[in-house]
Every structure is written in C-alpha cells, then in structure tokens.
Image (cartoon, rainbow, N blue to C red; front, top):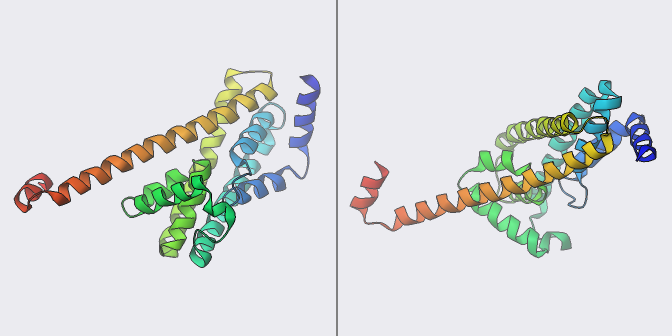
Length: 218
C-alpha cells in the first residue's frame, strides 16, 4: 500500500495535475467514459493529507472544467441534436435523453443543477437542453450554479472520507469515489421518482372534469 500511496502523492504533486483534473472534468460532460467524480475526489483526498495548498486550485479548475464541459454539451445538442453519433444512440443514452426531455418541460432549473451529479444524466440533460432550444441566457447561469455546487459537493465527500479514514489517502480516495458514485445514483433515483410523481399528478389533474380540476387547483 505504501508504494501506491507514494505514487498517488507524487501524481497529485505533479505540475500537470491541475491540467489533468481540468481536462477530465471538461471531457466528462460530453464523453461518458471519463470518470471526473472519481478523479476529483481521489485527487482531493490525497491532497488533503499531503498537499493542502492544492485544494483550492483543484476545486477552481474542476469547477471551470465542469462548467465549460456542460456548455460544450449544450452547444453540441443545439447544433447536432442527440442522435448524431453512435454513443448517443445507445439504449441507456436514449432512455436518459427521453427522461431529460420530459423533465425539462416540467422543472428545467432543478434538472440542470441536479443532473450534474449524475454521471450519464449530466450528458443527457445538457444535450437535451440544447436540442430543445433552451435559451442560452437561461442555461448559462444554471450551468454555473451546477458546476460550483458539484465541485463543492465533491470536496465535502473527499473531506468526510479522509476524516473517517485517517493516515491512508489511498483508501480514503477509494471510499470517497465510491460514495460519490452511490450518491449520484441515489440522486438520480430520487429525482426520477419525483418527476414521475409530478407528471402523474399533472396528467390526472388534466383529465378531471373542469369543476374538479379547479377545486383541486385551489
């Protein structure tokens, strides 16, 4: 374990670390195989014990990379839609895009912010927001809020894991990464369930007789 710890400490201390974190956080927004959550929390967990001065720069470059990547995904969706490339037509991506399109019509602001926490969801949400013609002046502020809150959330996860598992940055990084992914999946399930409940309620309300619908609205 000690050689691996030394390797990770050396990697985080490298002058290229900030560039790598920035690139990973940007690419992850429109290229699914890049695991920005894992890379960021691992880097933060290692930096906490060995290079505290890197914490603020790590969060800054991660935030900028995430915001830029989300806006690139938005621009791709706006320009070419959501079915141009093969990876966009995979079953999981098509399902995610369909869900995003449905939910964007109901809760666009909260979906863009919470979608940043979901690995595949963030891509589907931003591509779909662009493809359905969401105004850029409305999207950009939401993407800034999403990117800032996501990077702070990753910092908190890494700090919590490091406080729990002291003197072992490798294990802390692994636990933080697993915790971040699990929380992302949990957020995905919760938001999807809430969206389905809202759509069901709206559908039921729209099919009621006028008098009952007015009474329910009151």
